[in-house]
Structures are given as C-alpha cells and as structure tokens.
Image (cartoon, rainbow, N blue to C red; front, side):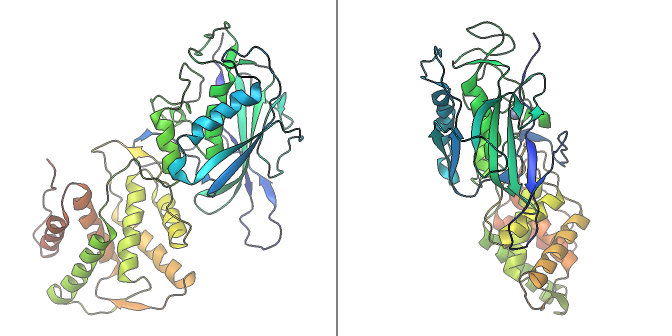
Length: 399
Ligand SMILES: [Zn+2]
C-alpha cells in the first residue's frame, strides 16, 4: 500500500493584472514545484500568497448522497460541511468565513465564479495523479503581492474510497481497512487550500498540521493550521514584536535633529516621503523581512499597505534568535522604491531632509535592531546616537 497525497499542490489560475476597466480575462497559469526563496529558516505554516476579501466565502457542496457513514453523517455534504464549520470556529478574527450551500445540482465549471465541492473522475478534464485524493484549483486577481482569490473549486477523486470518521487514517489505517479515507479531514485540508494555505512539510517544516501533504491520523485542525489562517488574514498571532509607530517616528525626528545639530548637515537631501512615512513604512518593510519575506516580497506588501489594501500577512515564522537583518543595499533599495511610489503613485511633492537616504536606511535599521533585541526606546535611541557620534556598536539588551 503506497501512501496517498492528501492533494496535489493546488493548480494556480490567475487573471491578467491589467488595469483595464473592461471585463477581466482569466489566464491559466499552472505552478509547478514549490519555489521557496526565503532568507530565514521558517518554522511554521506555508502560505500561498493569495487570500479572499473580507466576507462570506460561499461553498456549493454537491458531494451527494451516502449511506452508512461511520460518524453518523447523513450524507457526504454533511461530512464536508462539518469541515467548513470547523474552520469557521477559528476564523472569527479574520473577517472571512465559509458559507456552506448544500445540495446544489449546478454543473461545476471553472471559471464560473462559483466555488464547487464535488466528486469527479478528473480535475475538469485533467487526470488526478495516482495517489491524489483531492485537489483545490483556484483563480486569483493579481495584486503584485498578495493576490485576491476569486474562485476555488475542490475536486474529490471519484476513484478513491471514502467514509466519514475520526481517528487513525495514516497509510493503510482506517476503521474499514486499507484504502478508505476520511472525507472530513480531506475536506479540512482542501478548505485550508481554499483559504490560501499551502503544505508546511513542502517548505521543509516538521510540524503537526492538517495541511501537511499526506493524510495522517490528525483529524482536526492543529495550532499551526489555525495560526497560518490567522496570519494570512492579517491577525498577528506570531512573529517578532515591533515597537509602536509613535516611538519609531520619535526616533526618526531625533535623528533629523542629530544630523542638523550634531553632524551639521544641510537640509538638502531631496525625497518624496515625509518623516512619518519613512518611520512607519521602513518599519513595516523590516517586519516583513524578519518574518520570512524576501526584500522584494516585503516591498510589495508595504506598497499594498500604503495603497490602503490593509495589513498583509508575513511570510512565515522564523526560529527564535535567528534574526537575519537585510544587507544595507536592500534597505536603501526599499527606501528608493518607497520614494518612487510616493512621487509617482501618490503624487507627493519633493521634501528636503537633513538625512540622506542611506542614513535613513542605516540608522532606522539600527534602531529597530536594538528594539527587537530587547532594548526599550530610550536605550535604543542612546545606542544609535552613540554610534553616530563614533562610539561604535553597542551591545544588545538581551543576554
Ligand atoms: Zn494539499
């Protein structure tokens, strides 16, 4: 008995990112093997970089009749609906929730803007892999960062044997003997893909999760699954604590004064980002970078936030004590990107600062490095000022 994939990695179908106001066209893009490019060693969940807008996610469940389901579910739809309800029980803070629509007789299609859950011999005509139990296929609107999901269909493989039960279901194990799979946990897994979660084990993590690639004895959502969903929808449950905005801004204004009065600089460094924008958005960029995002991913997320699309998910959870700060050129690149965005997208006028761009990048990063390593605001400010005045790097505030 070979093991079975709980599902293939979801096929990704994207729409053109055209800004045209005419009907948006669907473009099929199939993503192959997961390409993970992160500077940090991630220790929790794996996100697909797409999510639903706030509100109800209607799921048309049309799995049909079944008799003799072990947990007493009257039919397949009820078995799958229990998985949707389990997700809903933890999605409260996210702003999204599943809405189960049972008994639909609509013919599933993709794309049709309907989220269908159904048994089939094929994935809309494409064959299932040999060991694949179910697949989630999604359409997204490209957003230059976190895409917006437009449709997700869950296709359950007709060729496999299912029932609905709790308890052991690892390779070959089931109350019915080898070859019978619990549709409810398969549903929990696929609905995790619908939300935007990927397989943590595919990103090299070893953690208990319903979202791991292979079906197992795990029959309920695990902490990692829940934290992944919360993180994806912008609920801070994990990650590195960052200082409040007003303290970073206070530091930045102190830095301006130091450049003027201490370093005797002229107010002649042009830029388009004001002090508050520099303090807030550099901090956000660094927060994304330290939480597993590449410099580019982090910049894309910040620009989405600047564009008022809300707080974006971090890219993962990194091991404690393993913080890797980005090289100086990446920090400067981000501030240049932010400057261009303020000029070209926000239409801001030029401002003169005492601090050149590199000074902003270097000293903001130093201040934040002290802050995320245990220093309070006063300790971090005095350490940075000491460095600017030639006193060298000070020790961190944690032992
Ligand atoms: Zn899967």
